[in-house]
Length: 397
Ligand code: SIN
Ligand code: CO
Image (cartoon, rainbow, N blue to C red):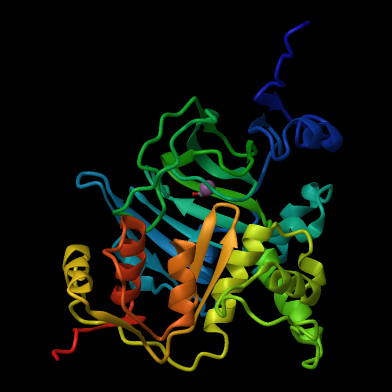
């Protein structure tokens, strides 16, 4: 079998083909797959906005702007979010800072015209054009973005370093609010000139630094909702349209064997009440429903004790005959899953030995007959720590 040669990472563009190839080829070989540097994507590129006008926009109420100054000697980063004031620029000096303004396409029709070459992409996938102005050494540090981006070099030079290593570490520095990477080893480095274009799919570590003089970069950024955002919005959308009378219903209810148990029949009824969630696996549905139903319409929470006992102290008290009282504002339920049982309390969940979970749900006051095992003690301790169970010392006779 012939080895497959990956498409080149660097190509040359032209006025006719800004990407150096037809859009269909770019989409097939690079889009959401691998980075691409296009030299001369926009030959003779003229920035549609002057740096002073960008600075002016950064001072407008409602414009999203950030001024980032890098103190290279102490490796500190200062971030000032807009609206900025003229005085902010007076202190910046002539190196190691950058101004970033998002959504400039919404404010300036000439900037918005830069989107035309990207009309082969669905317009609703486009987020904005962000423009950065930087003095030499200025940049935002090495980072990873969640979205595809086309970085058009507009003025001056920018040194770009990227990593195409799929195993490159992605952990971020804890000391900087810019989500900069803690480790960054570039696999490719280039100096981009006006009119050059760098395309990066999501998740590629990169670092762009202004080189030699003032630098403007135009970033055409895409947007793609996360599954979490899609799920949340769909749920809101459906909820708004469902009549209040449609509820969880159990006309087929049989007498409960263990009162706190969310059994198979209950889960089947939950599924019937949620037709759009039919594809959810049983464990996810069970975990969500257990958390949901134990905090549903709960007006208050028990207060957690200021000084809860440690596990050893709790065991001692239980062995000495102390009782565990369920807090009146605690709602419990439990359920058996494929990986053992779970106890739910006020929206939280813990792994639980089934016999103990059943007893905790059935009895408001509980005294153990034997010293608890490790799993039992861990569960009881978590509940005591959360204020769901309150210890009562044995009464003297
Ligand atoms: C820039 O500084 O212009 C680009 C920022 C980025 O890498 O996302
Ligand atoms: Co970026």
